[in-house]
Length: 93
Image 1 (cartoon, rainbow, N blue to C red):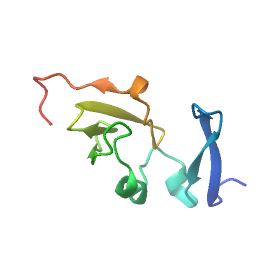
Image 2: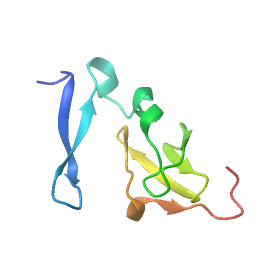
Image 3: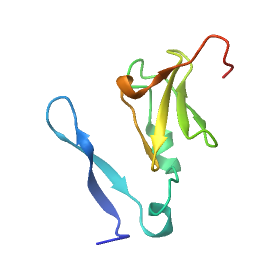
Image 4: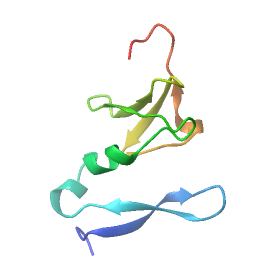
């Protein structure tokens, strides 16, 4: 049902063929590209398991250690190395 809390299948499968499950937020939070702050508290870099910096206006998560920038699309962080961009040395964090 629209707007119902729970879990939905993600936009693809993980490398082992399992479906990626993503949380569905109730109400208005589910309508935009709003990032769930509880999710930010538990997310780490998929490579080094280090903390991530959230850039709200740019809709991205940054791993300072690996200098990778992970996009947030439709409120969902894309935590795939292939989808991340390298942070140039001249770009400040």
